[in-house]
Amino acid sequence: MTDRADADAYGDMSAHQLVEEHHQEELRQRYYGLLQELRVLLPGVQVLVGFLLTVPFALGFEELDTTGRRLYGVALGSGLMAVISFVSPTVFHRVGGRTLRAERLVMGIRSTRAGLAFLALALLSGSLLVTRFVFDTAVAVVFVGAIALAMAVFWVVIPLRASRHRHLPPASTRPDRDDQG
Image: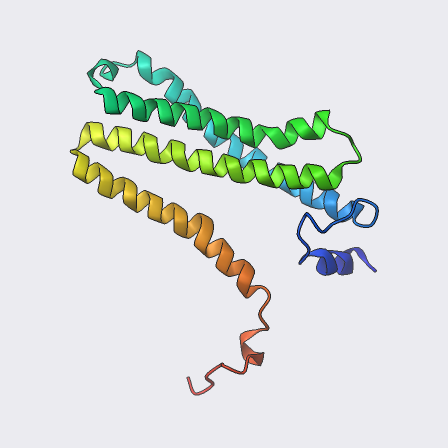
């Protein structure tokens, strides 16, 4: 098989299905692709955490009520957990066995998903903290609800639909297509 044919043949296989002895190049490409995605994502998360680390020193922090302080704690803790989760694949790459490509890929995918969940929690709790401070609680809840809905649509629904539709034949060959228009 050519490299392109290999990629097409293995593209539908999950990381759990790839075997080190047979799919070494595919595992390597997927893992390096994951690391590249994390290189793009990580600086933004680090900036978020950096800002969260400075908040207690800002004027106005003393005005936060107990709920505001708890929201801040959730935002800071989940932001830090997101950084840890997003850095984990790189650490595993450097510390883990060089021949454990399948394990590194599976662990990298899991820690990236965990990082996305922690990032979502940090963004939502931080947004609720700020909007609650600026507006009233009802406005804050509606605003954060809209952000949560957008996260669900863009981070879960659209990717799942796209992966489901990838396995369908092109629209022109589907029998349910209405050619009348």
